[in-house]
Length: 456
Image 1: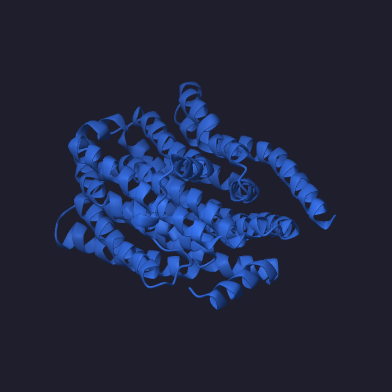
Image 2: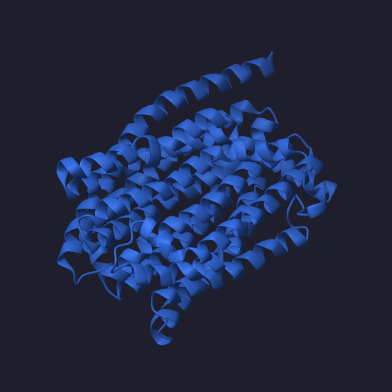
């Protein structure tokens, strides 16, 4: 990218009206998140046709997918937020060094996870909550996910870099291409070629390779504001610590999501395969709905971080208010659809098992009731992270699927039976929302103080 393009990009990020800028950046990120959610949901949809135990296997392996995503998003968000502020401060060489450091750190960590997973597949599946009947399906699915782990992780990193630069359209192209290919290959590999659950994993791994190649091409051909080079990677450990520190909220959010999924599977497993399958379906549908908010929030993040680096604090406040209000409306519409058509949605995945239909419908409706609250919660968490307030963002991110959820999912099933499993996440979301209000008040006060100091 030449100096003229950099100057144009700087003006776009600091002068375009906030609602227009966020909306422009949010559309491709929402599309990317929806496509990712669709092909994750497609795996569940097609595999569920193989039976209740096979559907449960997707939920077990999803914990591994969440770990892979946690690594990619932690480093991608951490380095991405730093490089976005560096670009906002016109420190382009430092931004390239940050991007390169994060990329190769993610490569090293994902290779380790891949090796461990391939060596101990069965043991890990049992640890993650697989029953004896689910285990064969889960192990077959997980094997190919571990093979594709490095390219999946690096795709998450590069996609977050492009979003952080304000070039989410490029990220959308890479993710969408892979996602559509995944959806097309699922039925072919699972049914036509007869690979079963392993076929779903093969389709995912192959599709992620395609996404990786497309995303990498944007960096190699100069479409990105930063370059990826081993020679530019930092030699100082402090740089990597800084990347991980800023990415901690994402690690808390994504890493605890994996732990939460394990705890949910273990809790559900005590009520049988039908309970595991139904919670897998309701969780995947909820995540699909929530991906709209995540995508909109990721359109907000580069605006917040870039303008914070450029000392345009008033624009950060406007961006926060706009994202929280619009996000709440989006989630209200989405949750209404989920609540009204909960039974039909669950039946689309598994209509032959009455127990799956009953448990899944109740779980999805409980979750739909609190989905609108995620508009404010997500905006607050992403705003804190984007402006470098790592500790506050990490604490808040740890609540929804960690500090609040894990004790609830361990305790409620003992007190309320299967209804306790269904209510654990909604109650955790409600408690997280209450805490978010206090964090948001403090965040806005800080921005106002910074804005006043600039004016003076």
